[in-house]
Structures are given as structure tokens and as C-alpha cells.
Image (cartoon, rainbow, N blue to C red):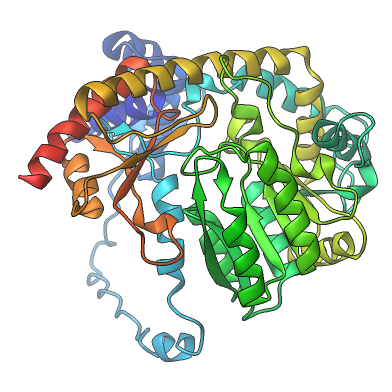
Length: 484
């Protein structure tokens, strides 16, 4: 059982128990709760914190935890009348001049961040399970960072020079074309995408995107007032023949792509197409925004990775985006945008207006983390664990749902499933949730009408290969129900 499920279940059990207590009654000690429910001290403290936030109990340091007193009206005074709800309908008119409901744009992003309720297997989330994250390394890095001289001083707006240098070497190599001066530290990958889209394209203009592509890219593009134009992807990455046609037809000045373990297809851009993408974009006078989100999620059985496009770019065509969030923690919102020339100045100006800078303690902690010898060991362990989950997922799909899985690569955290024609992917997702498994429909990954029904299945968020296999078994049952 994962930590989230344990906390939720313990909190619910304590709610029922507290209801039977008189006001002021002391709850059992943390040790007693640990022994009774067979949970860790962290689980107990987090469950108690939930009840404190709900006002059911109060915690008195050194004394214990007690049932809270009910809030009642003062004697001899009439009960306070219920507050009259305000009239918020005017906001619909005030917001109607905008481009449309933002909640519709953000819905797919909310879905990938949704924490499933207890008992539901997560084959949807984009972050590895908590057991795969380097929490001890992070805790130690945070502690060391807090003691660094100047750790709480205001950082340079572009980011700490040492951290920018680390990203430059990691992206372009020690003798590559990228220096620390070409790097801008951002608030994670999504923050970097937002800065790039708002900097490189004028509102209302077209932006070329892969089809299918990460739904968060489409949300960022549309929220910036831009128009996403799809360019199909196959097993070798973006179709460069169609990319050239799209540039010519739209006169777009930006192409957003994920050359490595593309989300959702898992495709890796082939060597021949790598050079073509740079040539076509340069001829069009356009930028390539390279979202290198999965480089640290390579599996233990993967061959040598291709270099980032930015490492082979001498003309400033590529704006490279890298984030440590998926491999480290959802809370380590640190990434880097790499660019040169006027493009970097534009990115810098957009970010400083939006958010000033990334907090220095977080940057210091990131530098401590990636400088720790344990970071390399963590990445090797993560690669082995992701390989095992992928292996379990592939075997279970061949057994339970033969024919839905196409080509896949040893990297990333997801698989792209091709459903039979006529399948309603949204209905299947709803049926799967009723069966206790959470997956993602394929529709939100397309900028236009999808050519076929798909599902995206993530194996990183599950707590082990056995749970991945069980989730796919439940998915088969849901498929049988939804298709009759």
C-alpha cells in the first residue's frame, strides 16, 4: 500500500473513532496508533494533520491530541443567520471577452495531476511513484542548501551560475556549443514551456506541434493565445516531409517537439530526421523548442541515447528545455531553458516580468542534489525500476489486450495503445475508473480530430510491476464492459 492510501485510510478510521469521543477526550498515542494500524510514524502524523485541518481534533505539543470542542452560538443570543450568497453571475460577462473557458484548456493537465482515491491503481500519472524518488537525497540536499553561505540571498535573475553551468554541460557536453551564459533557470518544465511560448510567438500566430503530443503543450500554446497546428508523428518521430509542408502553409515561426521518448507515443526521432528538422526550421526562419523531458527516465536496457538537438545546433535554432522534476520530485520545480542570441534575451525578459526568479534555496538544493554521488546511483536504480514496470506492462497487455500495443522504446514512463475503430476512449476511461484503475483517453493529445481512438497508459506511478499487471487486468474487464 502506498503512503497516500495509508494516510487516507487512517484518517477515515480516526474520523469514525473521534465521533464516539466526548469533547476534550484524548486520542491514543502515536505509538499506539502505529501498532494498532500497522503504519509508520509519518503516516500517523499526516493523518492527524488532516483531522486538525478539518477542525475535528486539536494537537497540544507535549500533551497529545484531543477531540476539538464543537463551535456553538453564545447562550441567550439568537443563532447567526446563514450568510447570503453573493451574486457572482456578473463574472460570466466580464470574462466572456477572453478566448474561452480556461478550465477546458486546463482539464487534461488537471487529469494528469489527479491523485486517485484509495484502491484505484494509478496508470495515469506523469510522476514516478514515491518509492522511486530520492527522498533521502532530497532531504539531505535541502538541509545542506539551507546552511550554504548566502543561501537566502536574492539569486541572479538568470539563476545560479554553478547550476546553469551544470545544465550547460549536461545538455551540450563539456566541449559543446552551450555555456552557462546560454542557460536560464526556470520553474520546472511547464513553467519553461510557458515562458518559451509567450516569448517566441506573437499572440494569434500558428505554432507547429507534433500530433499526437503532450496535452500540457497544447494547453500552454492555447493559453498564450496561439494556434496549434498538428504535424503527424510515426515510429521515427515527426514526419519531416509534412513538417516542411506545414511551415510553408502556415509561415509559423515555432515548432515544439519531444525528440526523445515522445509523449504519448514514445517515439525517438531518427538520426536522418534529426538533421532534417534543423535544416527545415532554419530554412523557415523558425525556432525548434526541444522539450527534453524524458532524458533522465532512460531504462536500464536502453541503448546509448542520441544527443539533444541543441548539442548539434550552432545557429541558435533550438531552444532547449530540460527539467529535473520527474526524476527527482514533483516538488523540485527546477528546469532550464537554453538559447542564444536575441532569443535568450526575450526569454529572460518574459520570465523576469512573470516571476522575477526561481527561489534561491530551491536552486541551492538542486545543485547539492546533482553534485551528490548518490544522484547517479538513483538514476541507475530508477532506470532499472522503470524497465521492470515496462516489462510487466508489455507482458500484461499482450496477455490481456492483444493487438493494442504498437512499437515501444526502453525509456520514458508511458505506452500508447491503439484501440479498435469505433471504441469510445472516454467511455472506456470511465469504465476503467469504476473498475479501480485510472488511465488517460487519447483525445486530449490531439490538436485536431484524432485519426483513431487511443489510450495512454503510464506505468511509472504504480507501486510495482505486480500492481501494473493488476491494473491492466482491470482495464481488460472495463474494456469488455464498455464494448459489450
